[in-house]
Length: 387
Image (cartoon, rainbow, N blue to C red; front, side):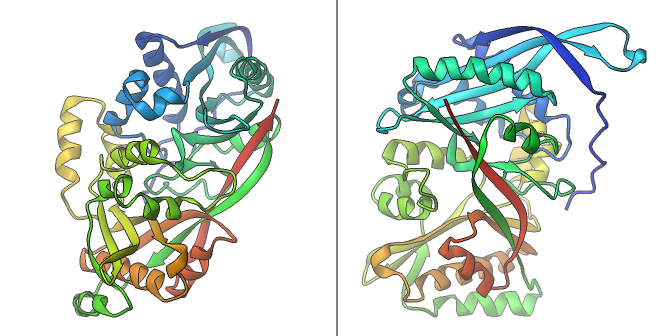
């Protein structure tokens, strides 16, 4: 884990002169993203997204998946009056809260995902912002919001509720410690998930032996182009994403968007076949969260070049992002074979730890992870609000 200094003790503040905005132009969306980014970067543990991930948000109509979700970028500005006499009187105007509303047009209930959410530590400000947010939801014909997430609940979803001293693995939420309690004042808990760690024996002898052992099992494993999961192998990807009743499996357009976001980081995937029929897959990545933190997401050209170089260098931790087996082929050892193969490949690459999830506690994958020594760690909570 990264040795990082504690969260700074930010002075309490009261806010006034609220100004609510809809970011409907390119420059407004840039301001929205910057406001969201400024909230997150107050803690050095937070992992900024890859700079290329900003482009679809700046031009959402160019991305078929985002365009059909009727994206609505909301933010609220205000003035701060510090409680400390050293801070003087009225402060300067700043962004107090942000939220990107993404509504499923094909859903009968028209559920909206609460993406890119952020807020200062002030309940009155958050309640004011949620009143503004509820008005916009009603205009969209939606009366329920779920989140927080980043673009899609299948990519990153939930709010961290413990272990704030740990740097977050890649593609896992991180937020200020005050946020869970603050959100529970305007939303209610919907689901809890846990992250799981698998420690790996990285001795050379063990790693070499593990590579030889990957052929054991009922299926034949072979490397896979991840983009095929959004095309001919879409049912495999969908079965790995159906871990919650609250989120429908991604269709072709959403899957293409999700995987294109994942491919901003080097990605490894394998498919399992029985008599040439694809029946399962596993997808892993080196955990480059530390590099994204150091490079600030590659927002500036020199750091972008450095991040590209560092992405090809060895790391010590990895991420198991998706593992799925078609329902008709489960309970035959294929999931165990895929997970064992992923762990063996991690050992061969010198990874000391692989993190998986977050997963709901009743998910079948939890037992599979525990069978290989996986231990539960960080807890995440998904919340909902009805309007």
